[in-house]
Amino acid sequence: MFVQATTVADYQHIRVEPITGAIGAEVSGVDLRDLDEDTFAELHDAWLAHKVLFFRDQPFTQAEHVAYGRRFGELEVHPFIEAPDGFPEIVVLESTPERQVAAEIWHSDVTWRVEPSLGSILYGRDIPAYGGDTAWADMELAYELLDDATKDQIEGRTATHSFVKTFARNKSPEEIAELLEKYPEASHPVVRTHPETGRRGLYVNRNFTDRIDDMDRAESDELLRRLCQQSSIPQIQCRFRWRPGSIAQWDNRCTQHYAIPDYGGLTRLVERVTVCGDKPF
Image (cartoon, rainbow, N blue to C red; front, top):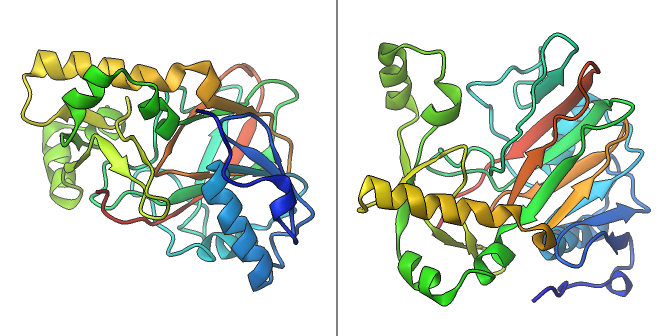
């Protein structure tokens, strides 16, 4: 079922244009540096309805980026990724001709936290002439499209998430053990209920979900493979072409995303703030 909860005509202060029938909308007619409460309330409603919002021509400074993110809640400081001086809340994701950095795997951000993020706001600063798009998948639709037998199999189950799969690749066993004291593994529902909409969606991902709890490892690996594959269904996805000054803002509780590394030899610089969330249920 691919029905948007909110239409263009419902908004008085912003223009919202869906970019697919499943997920994502481009918002215009707004300067995110100067939002009154009514406009902010409409943005929040549009975010819940479309799950990912896109904005063009937003000349953010780093301070303005942080200030906009704080409208939605407390911002996290990522323990493993570089931040610019003076702005610990900003994650810098920079690819150069010498070193390409891209999250080229479907994932949700920081699900290894006991209280994973609510959402993320990504700003395009230096964008290549071609390539470098980002794609998103609606994990509530991914859940709806599962067969009934699989839905029954995962009902009530939890899965363990850990930073180790992604951020411990070059660390010693001693370093990993020390980090696990600070950032222990977290167990979350395989099917998460969105705390604001009540909709249910898959909440496992390739980057951070290690295993399904209380299940044989081989059986867990096979089930996780099938569940994670759901993000690759084209009709539940949208794709965004970046330009300098563009923003993508996604609900991390019900989406996954994939940064497409098809700009070899060019520079790409984007910066992210991440809004703290709560414990999934």
